[in-house]
Image (cartoon, rainbow, N blue to C red; front, side, top):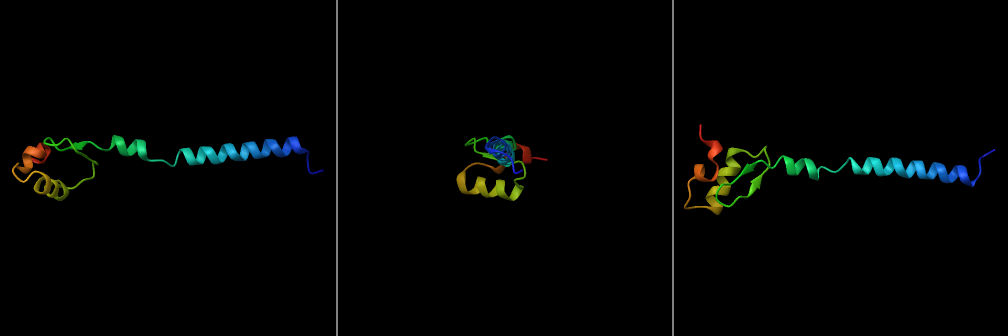
Length: 78
């Protein structure tokens, strides 16, 4: 009526496979690496694409006080 051990083992395997699939798609590490497309031209440090001009300016002032902001981040020139 309830099924044998073989059926229980099969159900347990299927349940574990579903858990593994759910855990695998939760990681964003790969997409975060792809989004790192702003780069300081002086030190080659990368920043995520949503980084604001203010954060770029803070980096330039803190890490490269002798360099111009636009030398570090030429994409900010308009």
